[in-house]
Length: 204
Image (cartoon, rainbow, N blue to C red; front, side, top):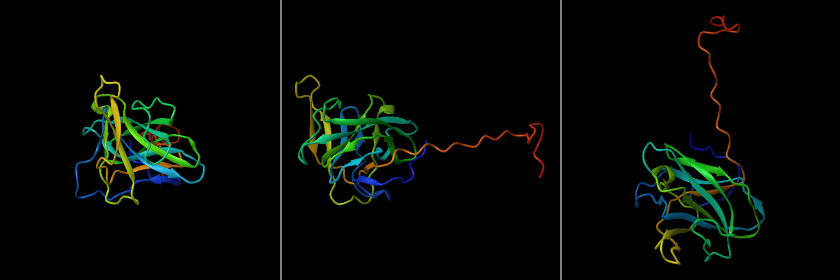
């Protein structure tokens, strides 16, 4: 698995791709009790093709899989209505596979967005390292991203989760594209020691 090439038209991106930030806090993490996201505004109707971010595995050498979702918001001060992404405001979600090295990873997600506010949110798929990811910080954000994060407060309480604006996510790259994820390139098949007739090396 390799990071994605730049494809399609950007509907939204919170930070430009590369270079990595050389200063700042450790990269924010996507784990079972903490989700990361950004709010964005759509001015004209558009259909998404994929969502993703600049990501890396949570643990070195462990390929991971997380969830990316688009949520409809009532405005810039609104948050998703659920932590498990099961409420009616969730328009769609996809799985995103992440491996080394760090880079842009995305999953296909086709949703038609009308004018209004939305959230792009990333969630863990479980409790183990293979279900989590990190978002290495990049050097340049675009304008002023409306980052937010969700956190489990008390699993036994009725209000067991909450979302908060900010969260120190500066430099986290999150994006929505019009194009689906391009297929992985196929490696050519080479049969050693066989020519056109399958019996020996090809003549030159």
